[in-house]
Image (tube, rainbow, N blue to C red; front, side, top):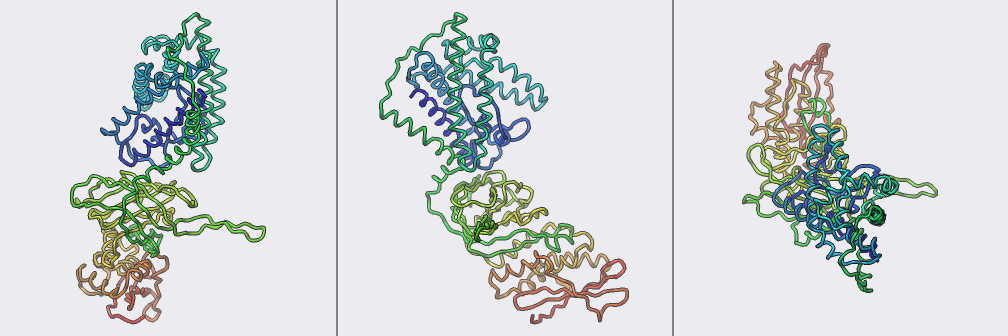
Length: 623
């Protein structure tokens, strides 16, 4: 029974740290030292390693195996007052529990008895706290020196390893921190050969255990935690037993604990076994953020949504990737979340949300003896947890974003084809909510873009895999004017290369009813001595005219038509043979609207394809 109590103690501490890691992402605080970046990467890098072989020191810990305390995506480091308070409290708690743990091992090693663990924690707390502070300071020093010169960091680690027996000597011989620290190098040198076989066995055991972290989902956390707690505790019992023997052979005193052994009652045994069985499962759920569902109790408002994604359209390529286009999709999409009053100054938004969206899933089917696996989009419900930071747009407007905050999917039933991540953005007035869904293996920061007025999320195109980035736009009511305003904000910073893709871009701008871009293209052509036959309108007049072509259409019809700007081969040019000559060719492009078709013609040289003229027909004709 004493052994199971010690194992359970390890489990409870690790589960607590796991829960705090998730809360840190939600509330915006980091935890020392588990959130610290390494010399070669971030905090996630320090935990997400492959197969590991190590030595359990003082108490088995998931960080020994490079198992992450949370599988939620990491956020930027937050070292404010909350982080300092939580880190200090956790450091003190770990020092107290380490005293309980090693004191319990001493009671077992010396008398095969169960001792009161809380009394052990009080007895050794001061010395263990000093050791924790010593570890923290030397760890920071090692990290800093490793950044400057990596070999220097390794040298310091080797020197500090000589002092690694300090906590064991504190407990075995009831020494103060200073006395144990001074004595540790000598005992280490004398007992090195004796302890080496045990150290090699520990390395072999941790190497084997580390394979279990490759298990899927919660098992990749729970199995290594429970296995390492069991094996690691046994290894540390053997270590303290061999140290006791060495010290007594050296005729040094190893005093017994001044505590009476306790008799474990049946109810207590049942409770310890229950905690032993339940802690790994609870920790595994917390590692995936399930404990954050506790913040989902309040009633939420529902917003309807549409979906769009970037496309590798003709105009995108012809304008040298300047003109971003989207393909739109209507569907049964909605999100339920609380948006507070944003009229005052609010630094962040946090909470949970229920979202209904499309997720690519592998669907297995069996036809006789042949099994088929297909990837199909499935509309399903998911739950998100988020902390959105206040950001300032280019014109000084406010919006809220997870890019410097945090957003994640809380896993539930149903599995996507591959792990998914999300980014979120909320407009400054709270009227629009955007959720960007993408595979975890891709970096969303490269496509994350917000309009200059902070109202719209206008992602850039990842030319390698644009369809893997799906954006969902939620609002109380989607209106045509909002879609056109969003498309216009997307086009605000287009810098057209001279003539390249001018006519494809002209068709796309007319399709998206963006008068500013139409005027800009026509002016660019005039500056290049291209004859332009078109109404002499300003951008407001062009915008008004083009949007009028959509009059009477609902949002779904508009999305279907503006998707033409993002699709390939939407504006196939047709040569007008009767108007062409040996040296020039005249082409026609059509732009379709709900009830009309606008056509324009352009002439170019057959020799160098230089544009010569463009003519826009303003009369409306039936399709």
